[in-house]
Length: 620
Image (tube, rainbow, N blue to C red; front, top):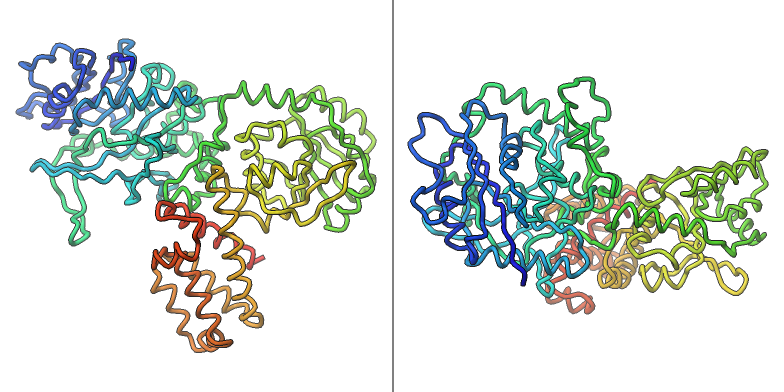
């Protein structure tokens, strides 16, 4: 293993534990001579402690900048000042001033980092919320996930969930967010994505995560616990209540301007992430060109990957359980451009056929998107039909606009179909796309189709979509030359358009039809009682408590319906509740033999997302 120097960033605000953190950091390192600390010591003249033990062996490797606490402008300002102490070390580790370390933490982190690079991750970041420790020597051994939440004011923040991090061959699991108290990366991150000093506190992590990700950095959870964090409060295991474990000074205790700083910071974050697209206050947008998003990936692509929608202030069920798949992660803008350029240059064998036109009319498809070789639009001479041609190459767009200049129902856009929202349409025609595209690009397009509520997918690569992307069989096969075009009703297979890795996509393909069969049988029981059925589905999807979901089953009218046919409805509800809440695990795993106990979080997210999609279909 190649070693390297590590620049450890610590922004400490009047923290008496800082000196213990620094001592433990050097003591537990395998190569302490390679560790260099950048310390921003925000102090008060009344403090009676120092930030580190000056007599310790490696204290000369600490670079320090001091600020009176009344000069401070918040945590992001402090971290920004800390980064000025960086001197081109190989790696950087950002931590808080109240941490403890495992033995040889430096070696373990570098091993993880190098393993990610060996697996093709060019710019990996290892980050999470470390588990808790207490000053009386108790250490939490649970390694949880960071999961997103959305405040009433529209700011996305993260919590340490109770969902433990799984381990697969010691390969770090992908994540969508960094935790400010533990970030390990190549030292170049400091120069490429410097901390924004104009942010205050809340929203620090979501803005840094999106800036890093859109600049081509990939975020992962560590495969093991590296550090422990002394939190201000912890949850008592017996009572479940929060217990305060230490008193610490906060920036707001010493600075009366904290509300104004927080207000401007929140507006800046919402503007950056598109939640509030228009801001007139120039103080809010100050220097944003230096601290904005990258161009290697788009914010739209981050939303698709993370499951967070900044405009609608929504998070999907995979995000709620901290489940992310790198199969949808774009590589770089250059890779996208190269692929789209080659794809839109390839000559297509697609030709006009009456069969395709008849199928579109049969399914009331009046507005269709085509993404290659738009000669197919010659099939659609009916002026009531609209054709939208999308191409990445402007020269192609110019050609088709000229060719079809006298047909106003045919319009052509220059667009990147991977990183931008698609136009409104009834269907999308993909010919020769999935057999030449990398899987991550294919998932990006399928996700784009799902997010834009496009009804139908018409594609030539039927076998690839079934065998690689694990889509169910198309509703129709259209003979075409010596092959077939497949037609999928996207709104009925919406759950299959969420990106999963191939293993989980295969399990989804087996599980969802079994759940659909139960729901279809249940729906037949409530055939003449639509409102009651919708209420049951609402309870199943929206509530986290199995007993609350069951309450409605005691309603006299519903109870009578469920008892028919030898209590068939009751048995169906029991089956659905068992997998919805993962109860009676042994029976569950016996019924669905292709899943195992390690699939619990995935199954819970999948079923919740499916039930939400199902409920929305009932409302149409």
